[in-house]
Structure formats: C-alpha cells, structure tokens
Length: 208
Image (spheres, rainbow, N blue to C red):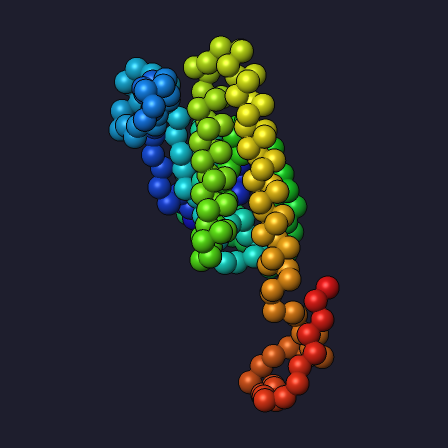
C-alpha cells in the first residue's frame, strides 16, 4: 500500500489531471472536451483522476480496481510503513470489509467512482465503456462551468442515460444467470484427495 483513502489501505497506481475546454464537435456544435495537462495553474476548470487498487485483482474480499474523480485531499494521504503495518489487514478485517464497501461512496464527490472491470465479451465491454462515458459526462456537468438551466436539462438527460444502462445491465444479468455453470454442492472442500468426477455420463443441471 502507498496511501490511505479515508483510513483504508490502498495503492495509487496512477493519477492524471485534466482540463475542461470549450470547443466544437464533429457537427460544429459547442462542446466540452477533456485535455490532459501537467500544470493545473493553467486557466480553466481542472479535475484529477486516480486509479486505485485496494488489493489483488480478482480478490472478492476487497474493492475492485477503481477510478476516482476529484478525491478531497483530506481523504487521500500517503501511507508510512508504520501506518501500513498498523493497518495490515487480518482475516477478520477482510471478512468485515463488505461493510466498508457499502459506505465507500458516502465521503466522495458527487461523481461516484468507476469500478474498472475488464470483461472479455463484447456486449459487457460496451456496457462498461458506456458507464465510464456517463461518469465523464457527470464530471463535466458538475464542474461548475454551466448555468442552472443547462445543468437541470443535462441532469435529466443523464438520468435517462443511467436508466438505459441499468436496463442493459439487467438484460445481460439474465443472460449470465441463465448460461452460467451451476454451482455444485459438495460434501467437503476440494483437495488433492478428491476423486476425479466421472466423465462421459449424464448430468442433471438445474438453473435457479
């Protein structure tokens, strides 16, 4: 771990700063574009993005690799070796980590973090990409560079987009549940003494 995020151990893999700039889209309409910058002293509206890991990728007991937007400086601080040793996760802490996952967004900005899942199938990849695009639109909206009327209309548009993404997620979820391999209820854990299951025989699979 390299940092403490609101008291939780984490590793900041990278951080980048971006500037919101006014421009024109492909149809010559006013638009806001993002430009990566190295000096936040330049004019315009800036925000910072962090890629943060809370543990090994694929470990279900920790929060997944996530992208955070504009974390308050009071919530993210460098971790000393003494602090890392003091906060070292025990098995009990891992079991209770689900509680911290439920409240992880409470102390962050109005733009929630983006969980950086990396699916293999194209449909799920498109869904994850669209969710990230929605997060960026929220960053632009809450940057403070728009008047009230624009913000109100844009929020309604973002809510419609969010609901559309939710419907896409639940549609994919039904597919995942239907076509996922059913869990087998075993009498004991699998180890080196476990017998090899029979092959070339009939299997009964019940989908719940």
